[in-house]
Image (tube, rainbow, N blue to C red; front, side, top):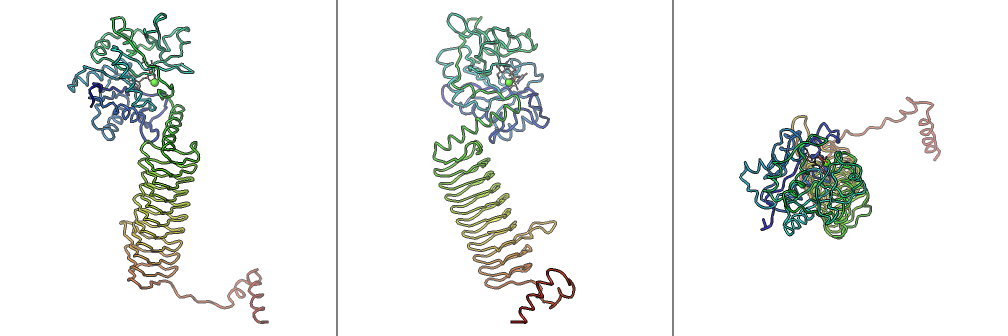
Length: 485
Ligand code: UD1
Ligand code: CA
C-alpha cells in the first residue's frame, strides 16, 4: 500500500444485466479469457492496492458472493437491497465501509463490474490526475463513435469544465449529439461522495438515484469537477449483451496475444489463437492456428503447440511438440511429442523425450522419460517406466466397476500390440508381452507374458462352406497354382 493508494475501490455489480438473457449466471460472472467480467475489474482494482475493495451485490447475489469468496478473498461484499440506481448502489458500499470501520478520508474510486478491458494503469492515471488537480470528483470519459445509451458529458461552453452528466434517456436532441460519454468510472474525495449521495433525488426518466448526479451537486457546492479522457474508448467498453461479450473477448485476446508476441512467442494466426490472462510463456515458443490456451498453461522455450490444441492448466516443456491435442492439467516434459489427436485427461505427466501418439487417451498416468505410446491406446491410472514401448491398440482395464486400479509397466518393457492390461497388474522391468495378450497376472522382470488361445487352421473350409464366392474362387486359384507348381 503506497501513500497515495485509494481509501477504497467500489465496484458496482448489483444490477440484473437483463440484456445478457442469462438464467444461469448474473452478467458479471460471465467469463472472458479465463476470468469473470467482475474478476477482471477486481484484478485491475487490486493493482491500486486500495485499503478496501468493495463489490456491491444484489441480483443473484449468492452466486456473486460465492465467486468473490472463492477467487477474491478479502474483497468486501456490500448488499444493495433494491436495485434502484447506481447512486443507491454506491451508498450501499459506503454503508458497508462504515460498518467495516474503513475511514473515507482520501480517494474512493467507483467503477462498474462489467468493464473487463479496464486496466489498473487507467485507474491509476485517473487517481493521479484526481489528486494532482485537487478535484472533488474526476470522471473517466471517452469519445465514442456511437454514444447511444451512455450518459453524456456536459461541459462549460467557456472554460470546457465538466458541469454535469445527463443520461441518454433524460437527454434532449442537442445533448444526444454529444459523443463524449461517461465511462461509469470515477475518483471521488470519499467524504464529498458521502455528502453528495445524501442529496440525490429520483426526478428523472428512470425514477432512480443516479450516481452521475453527484457531479453537478459537487460542482454547485463549489468543488472542482475534473475529467480524464481515455486514450482508447475500447478500454472502457461496458458489456451489456453477448455480442459485446464476444467483442470484449476479441479485444482482450488481441491484447494478450500481442503481449506474447512482443515477448518472443511466434503466433502464426492471432485471429484463431486464444489466450487466457494467466497463460505464461518463454521465448521462441510457436503457437500454430486454432489453438486455445486456458488457465495457467505454460509454454516452454522453443516448444511448438498446435494446430488445433486446447490446453488447460497444462505445462509444455522446452522443445516439446504438441499437435491436435486436448490436454487438461497435464505436464509435458522437455522434448516430448504429443499428438496428433491425443487426449490427456487430468493428471498426466509425459516424461522428457517421451512420445504420446495418434488416437491415444491417457488419464492420471505417468509416462517415463523416452517411453512411447504411439498409437490407438487408452492408459488410465498407469505408470510407464522409462524407455518402455506400448504396442498399438493397448488398453488398461483400470476400472473393475467399483474401484480404479493401477497398472505398472517397468523400464524398457515391451508391451505387444493389442494388449489388454487388467489392473491391478505389474509388468516388470525389461519384460515383454506377446501381441494380442490379455495380461491379468504380473509378468516378472525379463519374462515374456503370453495369453492367447493357440491357433488352429481348418483346411478347405471356404470351399466347403462358402462355395461359389469370390473368396472360394481366389482360394481355388491359389491352391491350383500351388498344385501346378
Ligand atoms: C451507467 C451510467 C452512465 C454511463 C454508463 C457507462 C448512471 C445513472 N449511468 O449507465 O452515465 O454512461 O453506466 O457504462 O450511473 N448497478 C447496481 N445497482 C443498481 C443499478 C446498477 O449495482 O441499482 C450496477 C450494475 O450492476 C452495473 C453498473 O451499476 O455494473 C451500471 O449500471 P447500468 O444499469 O449498466 O448503467 P447504465 O445504464 O449502463
Ligand atoms: Ca452498463
